[in-house]
Figure (cartoon, rainbow, N blue to C red):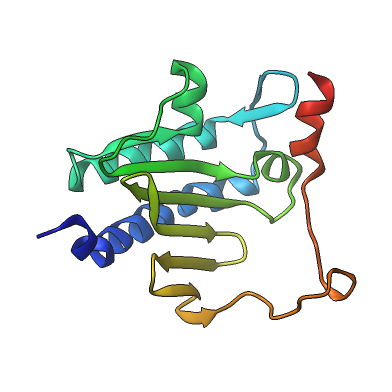
Length: 173
């Protein structure tokens, strides 16, 4: 069976991993956090590390031949490049700064590329219980209901959101 035929299975396993990691995030959200710094502005917590370990172990159990790129392991081991094979890209706790400060805008982000093309995506906010999923060519969903981009074509009538911290990294360097 071609890997593209397995996309629904890949999504199911990724959702399961995201929800399990979400349980760790939910428990840690209301507790005192031990915070380390990665560089000048990036933070990492034990929750980040525990979630990444859980997600990678879960995915490796089901897909041992796939490749993996993770925010915490990549930071520790150097950059990992995409391959033409199936490659999982994971941010185990996307929004660590929000997590540390008790803002509920945090999520588990898991993506799968095949041939360097995004094929499956999962974004799970365990605090707000919002699960975004998508399969290449099959649409995107929020908690199982279809979602779509706005049809608004005028910038002045649009909502545009950006993260200041992301831009701060470039200002500091």
